Length: 326
Ligand code: MN
Picture (tube, rainbow, N blue to C red):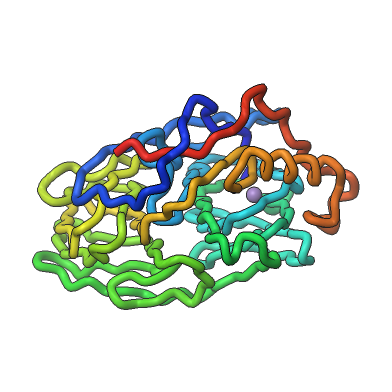
């Protein structure tokens, strides 16, 4: 979906050292971000956060809805990332410069790997407002993949991990990306990670296994959750739990749906601006110029004529990498 935020230019460069916060409990509230345009839509943005710019290689997390909307995200470019589109309600038509034209429904994953460059559009179906609710996340690509070819994949049958309950019904998780509780998603990943939608039944209490070498966070989607005896994330907020945990104990009074994300800490400096994930200011400038110049780097999304989203102007200062503050 459309991105109009800019990296905070006051943030300073990191020292590049590896990162290990240990087990923490850090509540990170979502913020309401207007996307602009005539319909004045907004999203709830849970990542990046000032203290925590990335969780593993996850570098962006928006929830779009629930709302009734005619979604028209016109062609726009991406670099250096994967987009994970995970619908909760409604259908999204995706078209891209590879010629993909796919309608995404609940239970299926759209995974777009930009590599060096791709462009895509995202529409709701029909001309009238329809109920829509979706997560869209970005994953930063590592050095050995971010310069490569673009790719697009859809996964309509994702594996389920079952977590035995101490109390109440067992929990189930849809393993969207990476590995969770020993169950592996078929989707392409390029760094060790997890992204899983976890359902806890009303009155249930379960142990959620985690990889102690990874960092993790839990996004609230719906319902109430207790994690390690403390209140879990409110809807759309993230609870960052750090590293060095083999598991967390979770329970719910009325039932809950959450998204567990995590992975090996991503130690490259990331410069993010508009729809681009890069390493330096100059890479961002080049990507912007190539989009504005209709370069072959991004190509053309079929079916849109001359319609596309122009890049905003760059800020008057050099963009700097995001730095962790935990
Ligand atoms: Mn996009």
